[in-house]
Amino acid sequence: MADIKIENVVGFTQIAKSLDLGKLAEVIPDSRYNPEEVPALIIHSEKPKTVAMLFSNGKVVFTGPKTMEDAHELTESICEKLDGVGVKPYKQLDIKIQNIVASTDIKKNLNLRSIANSLENVEYDPEHFPGLIYKPDDPNAVILLFDSGKIVCNGTESEEISTAIDRMTDKLSSLGIL
Image 1 (cartoon, rainbow, N blue to C red):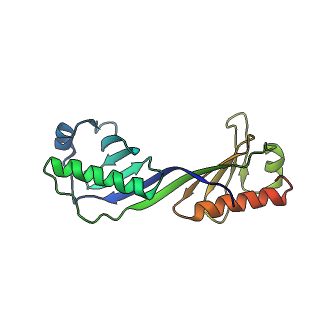
Image 2 (image 1 turned 120 degrees about the vertical axis):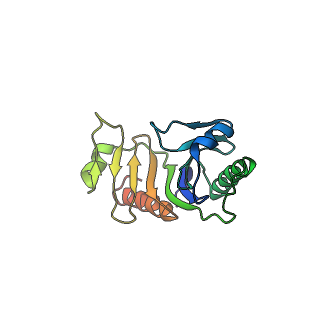
């Protein structure tokens, strides 16, 4: 089993029935709202280091947490900010994870050209991108291999991330690479 590090979690929740983004932009410090650019109020947070986008339909999309605890801290912080300016957020939030990005390092240089020739569902064009892109059938994920031995996996929503990385390292072992 590979030593996997979660790099980023992207998720969402419904925080209220609706939000007046223009008014919120005026009263929430350090928020940014430019509806011509993005139809959301953007709030950056340093602890945990995240970005949340609040939409007028009350939905919040966030990126940056590395754990579910971080995701809960972020949504609690947003609820406190809303409550502080007179907007009553929902008390029970159902946080959904949309995508997890994780990485591991097998600590061995990889011959990406050789791997590309040995696997199906691979894109490898080093003139445009320095890594090999592998799209396994199961689980549904995208795995990036780099010649340094670094492996990045994204596109999963749950514990499938470790399954995808473990299956990738098993494939590399079966090819005699590990």
